[in-house]
Image (cartoon, rainbow, N blue to C red; front, top):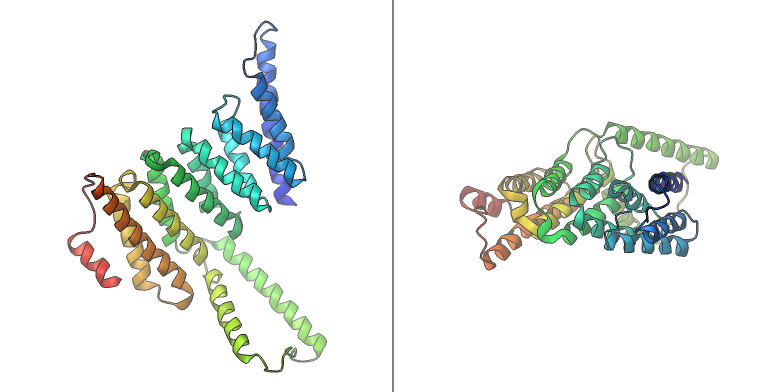
Length: 327
C-alpha cells in the first residue's frame, strides 16, 4: 500500500543517513575507534526489521529502536527518528502504532520541541494530505507526549500546542480540498445507488418488511449524526475539532502554568463560543469536549492552589459569570 511504501522510503533514507555517517567516521582512519559501533549495528537492525512485512519482526525492530531512544544514543538522528515513528502511527497493527506513541513520548523527554513540532504539523495538516484516522492517531500521540513531558511541558513547545489546538478546535472555512474530496465521494455514491435502482427497475426493497422499524429508525438517526460530523462544508470535521479540545484539556491539566494566562483565556473564549453558537445535535460531542476543557481548567487551578503555586490568573469577575451562565 501507499502507507507501507511511504514508511519504507523513510526507512531507506534513515539507513542511508546511518551508512553515510559510519562511512565518514571510517574514512578518517582505521586507528579511530568507533565507541558506538554496537548502537550503530542495533540501529541498522531496527531499520531492517521495521521494513519487514511480518508484524512480530516489525515489533522487534521497534523494541530495539525504543531501547536506543531510552538511553539517548548519539547514533540517532532526532528529526529522522521522529519522522520514522510518526510514519509508524499509520501501521494497521494496534500494537505497532501504540508502541510508536510510547517511543515518541520517550524521545520527547530530551527533544520536546522537535517531536512536538513534527506532530503538530501532521495533526493540523495544512496541506490536507492526511486522512481523518491518521490525524486522530497523531492526536493520540500528542496527548501521550504531553502527559509524558509533565512539568517539562513549558515555553515554546507549550505555546505551540496551545495555539494550534485552539486554531483547529475553532477553525472555519479553510478545508477546500477536503470538501472537494467529500463531494466527489458523494457523487460516486449517488451514481452507484442510481445504478442499483436501475438494475432493480425501481426502488430497492428492504430486507425485513417493517419488522424492525424501531431499530431502523435508530440506525438512521445515528447515521445522520455521524454524517453530520463530516458534512461541515469547508470547516474541520467535528471529530478532529473534538480531538483538538481533548488535547488542549490534557495540556491544561499537565501544566497550566506552562501554557500561561493568554492561552488559557483564549481557550475559555473558544469553548464559550462553541457552547453558545454550535447547538445542533451532531455537534453534541464538540460541546461535551468544550465542557471537559472547562473542567480541566478548574482541576488545574485547584491543583496549583493546593501546591501553593500562585498563577496570577483564573476564573474571576465577568469571566466567571459568563462561564457559569453558559454552562
